[in-house]
Image (cartoon, rainbow, N blue to C red; front, side, top):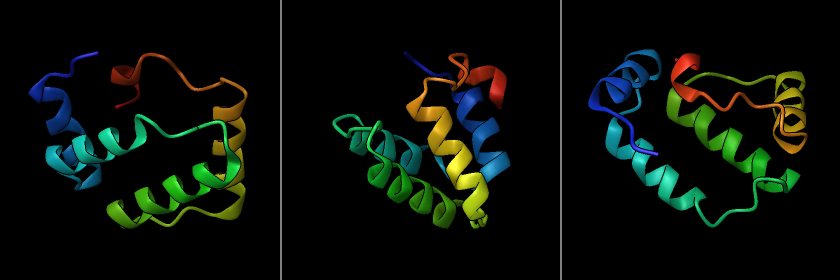
Length: 80
């Protein structure tokens, strides 16, 4: 799936995370088991640190549940 520069600009505007950082994280995650709860918690903490936004334990649990149970929207562009 290819993303346009406008997509990355919208993400950067909302998160203050630049395109290069996003692509580096995506590359790192390609061979990661995102159904593993421990791995997901690490990814959430890394994203929290990148964006400077704190994620509560409750929200972290909801995110993990959504990912593990395939409840994440498939159209990422609509999420931004």
